[in-house]
Image (cartoon, rainbow, N blue to C red; front, top):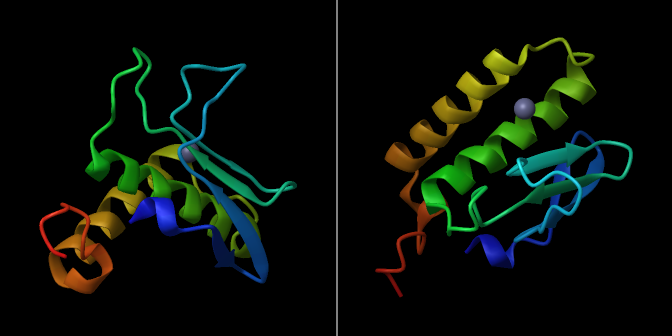
Length: 110
Ligand SMILES: [Zn+2]
């Protein structure tokens, strides 16, 4: 399902969603929002090259979206810890209450 997302509209900007993204310079990164380039980049591998759980990838996606919202509407005032908590919380609420959003995420529904 994540592979089908090509762009994400956030605060009047159209971010390219680059997934799976292969970080070249910094292999310790799993995700990154680039505001000037309007790109959200997320890797499907951990630092050791193992496939990451989809739940972790989705948390990263919300984390980066919140960074973009923060940049656009809050002048980048949120701390990394706040962005982390909001990303995890939003991911949980959507997953547990809005099944359509996650339809197909576990590859069991067709
Ligand atoms: Zn962050």
